[in-house]
Length: 223
Image (cartoon, rainbow, N blue to C red; front, side, top):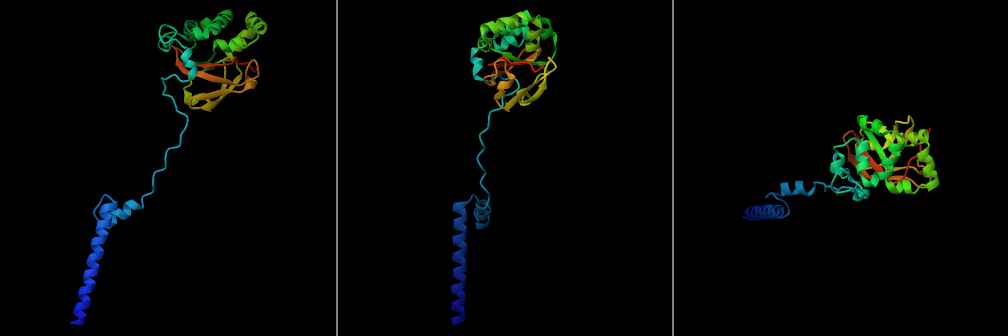
């Protein structure tokens, strides 16, 4: 009789433990057993994504300077896409001084007929920052002006994820671009004034034969 009573107490305790374990599993996991809940409880949490610079799509211009580009007409992003690069620049009021310099150096046909190039295009304020005497002297010196302008042209259409690095220019020298995402710069020692680094302010603008990155400094050739 004593052995039977002890056996009954043990069976009741085991049953109670099984019911308790099942109930905990149903509350803590999506399953109905303790085994499923345990498996879910030991799954490591997924870490939050680290914030990085956004990478623009292949056909999307980027940068605060794009606000200076017209929203419609031949000088807009859509209008520039249909024209070769020298013509496209001449239609964009943000690049009017560059267009004048290209004409003065007689490079319009060269830039318009060269296939697949990348142009680092100084915006008007970049030229305005150059002292007037020095700028006029440069515009009057065709060989030097040609060297400066062709230093801003890189063979091949570089997408944003290809822009960073050291590239050979049409002037047969090199330009080094640093950065990633939507943040690209060229060191101050690579600019005409040599006072501050050049930054891409409106990038990945497409023309019929070129990808254009508008910059806020005029660059200086290294040869």
